[in-house]
Structures are given as structure tokens and as C-alpha cells.
Length: 244
Image (cartoon, rainbow, N blue to C red; front, side, top):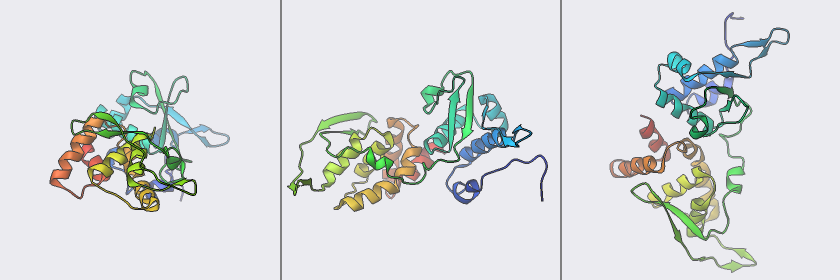
């Protein structure tokens, strides 16, 4: 049955993301879907609109959300590679600072993304031999300290040590990897093999990406509170607390 005045919604939204996303993220995702796939751009080819300018006021009206909630939801969807945001020049605006003060922002669904599945790229960007590491203090600041290399050599290969693996997370150029390193330290986790450590890392990639839009202080404060009231907390729990 063909329904007139209908918007095509990708099946993956129902099959995969419905259980993963919060209601605020879903609202924004549906608005972007309506404003793009809900419009036929070319009547001859029936091609749907690829991207659309959507004002924050329009999102407020359509979703009933506050500006702050909309900003956080957009940042979360960008971090999960579900949407892309551009300014009027076509420059991608992935960070909140990139979007701040822009008169026009264009939104596009990122339907070909594999950002929610582990594809090895995250692990490739982890330094193998850290010398300095970064850790979070309870006050929410980032401090640096120097560590000695406690790596033994065997057949020219460096053996696995948890300390070095943890330091590599702290030294990663990717902030969500840094967040996982902080979480491992906060939970006092340790793994005796690289395989176990990398499995744990992969398991925390998605929730760590969700936390990227939040400041160090916000993450530390939330995690510290949860560690006292709910010792079995996870990064998902931290995210839910910050967005509740």
C-alpha cells in the first residue's frame, strides 16, 4: 500500500538505533529525516533531498526541546556518525564550537556510516609506546605525568603490560579513547593480556563517543557521584546521568 504525504525512514532506525538512542536524539533524527528524505528534490528522478537548512527555532518548534537539549542531541548524533552538519560554505561542523554563531546550518543523514561498528580505525590511532600520559583529577582537570617504560623485549617485540596499554589510551589523539582510559582507571580495571584489553576497549567505544560533547569536569563529576552511589556504573550510565 502506498501512503501519500509520507516520509521514507531507513529500516536501520527501527532495527538498530531505536533501542540505542535516547528520545531527544530520536526526535532530532526524525526531524532531519523529515526535512530531507521527506522531500522530493527532483520530480523526474524522484530523488530525495540530500540535506536541508534547519534553524534551531524550527527544531525547537518541531521537537518541543530546549536549545541546550537540541545542541547535545546533535552532538551525540554527530559523534555516532548518524548525521553530518555543514555551514553555508560546505564546511563540515562536527564540534559545537564549529556550529556556534553560524546563521545557517545544513543537516544530512549519514546513512552509509559504519561509525557504530568497530572497524579497526579507532585502534589504529592508539600510540603503541606512550612516554607521557594524561589522567583526570577529581576536580575535572587534565594533568600530565611522566612514566618510565616498563617494557621488556622478546624477539624484538615489546611485551604487553596493562600500564603501557592504559597510558596509550591516555595519549590517544582521540578524546573518546581518553575517556575510556579514565573510566578504566576510575573502575580500577586491569587486564592481563592485550586481547582482553582490546576487547574491553571495543566494548566501550560507542558510549565513550557519546560523552565527547561533554566537558572533562562534567564527566568526572558524574562518574565520581556514580562511583559512590552505584559502584557498578558504566559509561552508558554516565551518559544517561548527564542527559537526564
